Length: 529
Image (cartoon, rainbow, N blue to C red; front, side, top):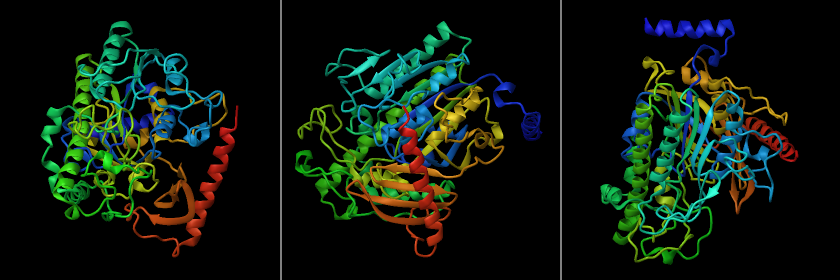
């Protein structure tokens, strides 16, 4: 009976032509974005890392299985905040000293006229955008500018004003502090504007390198990964398949593909560092321990994120905001194969995971984190662009629909129109450029499939276009496209193993032409004032 009533209401509102926002109280919206987390890292997406709070959000909400980002941090954040592909607004590639085109609104600009208050905490990293509070429309912002330190950030701002650097030894960890600021903002919201809906954007910098985490959390995973990335990867793939999240084969490790950028001083990181994702059994015992420790730190970083998400959700419940808050959770790109030594540098005598160390996950474990897909962050193969998307909304998602999977294709540019439909906001923009995304609300409610023409990708010479189940992709060589396009049928081959270019040349040509047409249009858009 409850199911019939739910669908009856949906049909009634559709037939009457009423917008969604006209038939219910405007919801609060919480965007939670993490940095460099792989597709299969959370437990609810097949991982072994302890993520009980994310798992709970998925069990009482929804999981999307084919949701995409842009393969890199700043383009994803640009697409998220503006609703445009980053190429349309001068963000990828970044036009030197450019600003976003005139009339480009950010999410808070659309929501302000509807009475929303807007808050930001964490990473910003939207090239050419105004400061979050001054011109970005946020009422309060904690902006973390230092991405090379997790225990003593040297550059951060509160409401656009610089904060003192954090001194080493202070009780500070970026993940915890970002969550603290979100919680403070929510409390202030209830105290000062209890009747207003809110939009909150919580952008964690973890688990992006450097690998830093509290030692007591690292110790939970200390010996867990000594069995190696091959066994972990097989186990994750089995879980993903059992859960119905993927229907494909497991891509092989690409032993000749290392990090996307050169790093010529591997020895500075220690004798256990490995540049390529070789078979685990070929490593020395020293290499195995070093690599297992790195993955233990990565797992601890994800674990800490989950704990802090739990604190935020608990606060929503205490404040009476939980039932009508829509929570979106996703990652800005696939897991990273990068190996670098930046910031304060790496002290080989420091405890791994401490503030004096500077380690990156590397391609071996990144391959496992992106199970079952190929490649990593930067590439437009599935491993670089696929992310979990969890949507949780107690008041809006019927109980019988909870713990469901949504196989609709989606992209980061869809978040803006989804939020606008939830809030009942207009998508009018002074620039005259229509938003390219589609609202995911019909898919979230289960009323219909999300309409989709094509999804576009371009980053550092890596190019791709997905149309329906088919995907054309060209992998960069030295950051330049190699003009060798491949064609895959992702309905059965999301691991991108069976190139159909020779069997279906007309289909491939069709997708390439569409990619080229969209590229020309985006270049034209970016040239506007």
